[in-house]
Length: 112
Length: 257
Image (cartoon, rainbow over all chains, first blue to last red; front, side, top):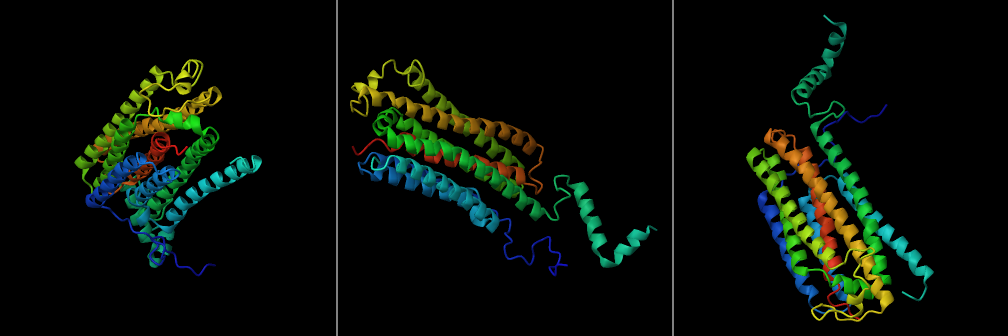
């Protein structure tokens, strides 16, 4: 028999996440940031940065996606289970890219 | 008196269970197989995120294809990408971000039990989604008229990319074999934005159903899971566009040749 007390409400569980409610002010701040960085990414695209154009564009896109995930999607206030699930999704995508590119690059060695 | 009831009552558990059973009948959205409301909510959002994981891999495959073909046919991708309208793409990004903002406010309205505001925000989310699809239709129509839809009638003999028109942003003359590969860019453009648009059409369908239920007051009595989980889907579709926009429209203005 388990010695754990029956605890359906997760009172003793430190992983327990409250149902956090974000207000309109916080959402407006996120919305303003997203619009601002959309303007920045379009403006930067017209400046010739050589190979850094795509890097800056994707960096800004990653930043925007991160604040959408953390605040619009409430992941910042979610349980560790949900946080780990989200991280697992993007890690798996990175595995997809890394292994596919490794294969293609090693088949055309020196041409990339 | 029933002997089972007598046996259970001294523990106190039976009474609590009866109360919970009463609650179940009063609020049919709370399912019997969950012990608490909190557990049901957590299980629901976990399940929604597992679905979104499969969506990450679905769009991930398309992004991977884009990455690879952009490396292989770089000059063709640059030339084709410079046919995109940056003002329309920027406007559409702003429209989609606004739609996501309205959805986020809708979640707040449901959580704080404001029925009128919830319905209003859901309608605004839907309308902005429709505006996005309208602008997308306009862009597709332009591609159709310029023969940029991949297939038999694609730009006749690629002359436009071999000898760019005077007004084109990119004035590079491509060799004919590279010019043919502009079709690969347009193919990926239509598949990626088309799949994104299909997700939005499905989302708008779900939104209409949510608006009808929200008007009935289904989500302003403390039960907000459908609104919260749909918001996760809607924001995910936004995020896909946040990456499509720079990749398809922006990063090839200065190709660094």
